[in-house]
Image (cartoon, rainbow, N blue to C red; front, top):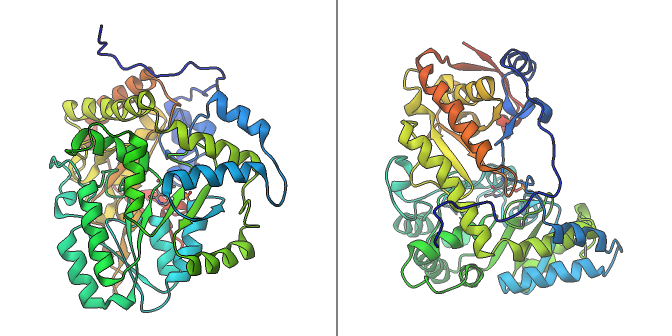
Length: 458
Ligand code: F0G
């Protein structure tokens, strides 16, 4: 018999209690957090959809690996296992361990960046952009036009606009391009996948101009799932083979392993070029750690090596992608404007459409994030003008192209009944949507303002 229900392909061995707060309690918690979901305490949250990063439940095998972790400063066995796992996947000669994705980013973009340099991506993730801009370089996003229409169905909305890529390289001069970065899946663009065809085209353009192509591969396994099921010619390849092919088209990769390596902490930088790898290794040693741990414990490296294998298991990936789609498609049917098709790690709600009465400079996404918390204790994050907005010379907001709220789903953590609870909360959000009010920012830092800004309801 072929079952329709896709069950979580695991049993629960260890549980973490959830504190069931009341709406009155949450009102006080949110006020204390200055209406910023990042400033809430985790025990004030019922369902934590803030991020899928570092929030995975590890497997029994991974926990066993934790016990096996070799904590030697140099030449640890656990490093050997991690290095082998990364080399096997990426096919790259040089692997640098880092404590998380942004450490790899700081090293590589600090090295390749600087004033006058331009980086081009489908969409730079916020820490990627921040590291590039911090180096003095500029970061330009050029996902295909379809990516800006949240309701439009397209199988690979994460693709790069290759015409724009070539004209930008010509306009800026190939020698001024720091790198082209393909983010898979395209997190800030709605968790949408990139096709192999697009990767091949981008790779060919980069080769033609002698420009470096890097993969931001946090969610490369999820991306491989979409390729296998949506792109002709990949039906019979394994998920791992698909990922390996994608890496083979690039010159390097940065990974926040807190996503598709199913670990709570970890990352790496993988490179083909010896000279760049040596320069980056120097930077690694100065701030991260020695070359055989780079800021990670032996046990972290052990768990990472195991997770990087487990993530490609077909039963896991099918459950993962289909359970995200289950939530997204339910919300869509109820009339919640969601980004379509549903991405891999998260459901993105179009808050500009949901709260069409709230102007963008009153941050409709922030308003929805607050509503979801108040009504259901659900923690989400705004991915819109709070995260990506800028100001012009007169201090007027230059809004982000979209006002999204992300419901990022931790891997192997929540069950279907948790998801049903979220769907029920949205029913209430829909009923009261005309009463939702906008927010103003009362305090903000210069970089990555969404993390620490304070807000007030209007
Ligand atoms: N690149 C992408 C595409 C990411 O999604 C992230 C992190 C990073 C790089 C940076 O990695 O956090 O390990 O330093 N994304 C998390 C998120 C934080 O919630 O989407 P990190």
